[in-house]
Amino acid sequence: MHLSKSQYMRGLQCPKALWLFKNRKDLAAEPDRRRLNLFATGHRVGDLAKQLFPGGVEVEYRQSDYQGMIDETARLIGSEKVIYEGSFASGGVFVRADILVRNGTVWDIYEVKATATTKAVHKPDVAIQWYVIGNEIPLGRAYLVHLHTGYVRDGELDIRSLFAIDDITEDVQAEQASIESNLDNLKVVLAGSEPDIPIGTHCNNPYECDFHGYCWRDVPYPSVLDLCRLNGNKKFEYYHNGIVTYEDAKNHIDLNAVQTLQVNTALNREPHIDTEAIADYLRDVSYPINFLDFETFQDAIPRFDGQGPYKIIPFQYSLHILHENGDLEHKEFLADEAEDPRLRLARHLLEDITAKGTIFAFHQSFEIGVINGLARHIDRYAAQLTAMIGRFKDLEIPFNRLMYYHPDFHGSFSIKSVLPALFPRDPELDYKNMDIQSGDVAMDIFPHLHEIDNPDEKAAMRESLLAYCRLDTLAMVRIWESLSKTTDGADK
Ligand code: SF4
Image (tube, rainbow, N blue to C red; front, side):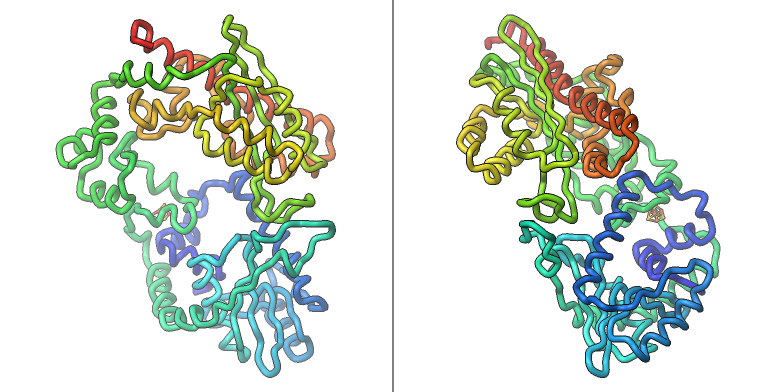
């Protein structure tokens, strides 16, 4: 058996995922832009963390020469104090340690992760390194190096403050007892045919498995797995006991109110509309009505002063304004990717948003959180920004409080579920017609725009960002109009 550390971790999550990876890699999904960016961020953070222990020697990765990397590491162990990417093999497992630091007669392991905390999954990750490396050289302590979210950049990056270091030696040592049996299990799995492991919560935990498309191919949609507000383990328990469809769920599960609505509307193909509740919700809306949506990004490594790791930074907004006479205005802002977007964005927003009138957001806690963040960052606009907060009204409420429920929501109340259910055949409101189809993609594109040299490519990306955010607020306008129509004749 030959396993890398990542293959061992894959096998711990699901032995079938390891078997498929070794035997049917063709069935794996290609990594998407988000995953590729995560890899790239991990490498950048790893390189920066090496500066915590300067003067080390790096063992270069050579795909077809693992033995050469191992031999080179063995030579460096005899002479160096700090080794980056030191390579070892033992018990059929090959590992590379991010940073090894000599500490008297022993070596300490430093594993670097581009996360904000040490997570449970990091412990077996370091434990397998400890197991393999400990067979070759004496070890002292094991540390997890992660980003310190309390750090705020002020001038040059302060590497010591950017990172936090957690001593996880005890956890790593406690894991040693299970490693031999884990390896034995994986050896048996790899020696056999494709294991019969059912789908479960492990398909997305701790990582989203790239064989999802293959293993989930026979799961109908919708199914009991789509029931909202139901514990994940419970869903799979039902599913594996043959309660699969909504019909099954209706007959065999004690459904709560929202699940009952979800199942009944789907089976009857009839939306549920509580016109009185919707009329009540809409009663205090005042013109001009603002429909506001922000796009944000979170850098692992802060680029600007006043920015910390993974701090939410808004870079764009779209604002539709509906006037009492029916006129619809559109305003938007997309930052220059080369500078900190916050000051200009706040100034434009305060100019664009009307001085009075309701401000609709879809899932308003996000927009309010962004405004509070801007207020904390920019003293001179703080009062004006926070004054906006009392005017917010959440357009998600009629849906997540079940005033309006459409069978095609399938238990999700996000705008990406609500819009196509309400406007199934409107190409103007179809995210599938956009180059960018989700906020996750938008938040991945903007922080990398400054790295694009081709001006045409950059302009096209910027236009796609504008079009995506514009649709978010146009969607809100149309949803509000649709809600208003349902109350025609009700007491408003
Ligand atoms: S999709 Fe789920 S069951 Fe299939 S290999 Fe991945 S984790 Fe295992």
